[in-house]
Length: 378
Picture 1 (tube, rainbow, N blue to C red):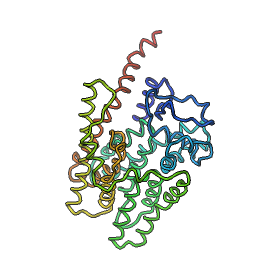
Picture 2 (spheres, helix red, strand yellow):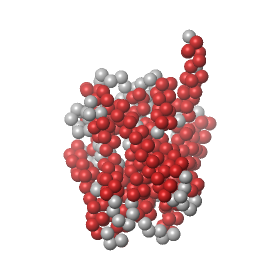
Picture 3 (cartoon, rainbow, N blue to C red):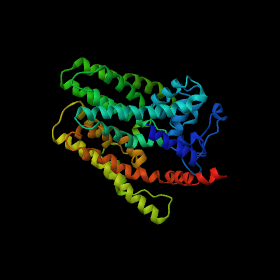
């Protein structure tokens, strides 16, 4: 957590001119509600921004009373992921001037939880607790630290689920799943998978309680539907792996020089290989006919991922990497005792592409530090 905070501090200092709102990756054309116009926001010129810019607005206005809903495209869909922004708002005591600091704290706090729970899981298997550090380099953790998305929270909840789930329901699992469903809709397959597992173990009450953890999220989704229909249907198709296959067959084109564009396209396929390997590991677990709480959640997540068709999900590693992180973690937890390095290989492959995204920031930091002695001499 400390290392990621230092990385944020350095990139804000040397790449964003000391303006911490640069972490939200805000586009110049992003509508700014009246209550935020006094903030000195950092805008990324010639950019569409990233999801963090919407979480920023939601964190200031989680209950849709200040105009943030009108400023966000597909607000009903974006507001579904309410847990992290609402938690930041709560930590800030509803004070706009404290929201930024509380949001960064929440993100780093989930990094801490994810590493802690992953280390506990590894220890339970007889492995070194240092394996918990793998969580800090998952695509969800890197993307959330760099662009303030909420995916690190769902990843942490996945690690907590893996640690505490079992043949009978633990109250900690119920709390984790309830929060996870409010964090991102992609947590629902984990809830479904675990409910089915409990049913096969004749844990009737446990299955009911587990399924009930999705009710607050579903109620929130229904309430949001008044703001407009959700976009879930446009993300899901009926042909398995259609979205992944379409992306694999059609390389993305970047606004770079021909050589840099070609190199980036090749590295894209390294990340896509990581995504494919994740699904292969899930299939491998199924072929071994493993059936436990983690395996059940793995199958449910893998099926959900297989039917994601929207190009924007598979377009670049920041997108599909963070969506795939819960499945990556579940397959890792299931395989860790057998082949630890194979278990973490999908994460490493996607990270190769993510490191390319971070190269510009790293160079900016190096240049800034290199000029520091000259600045001190002045």
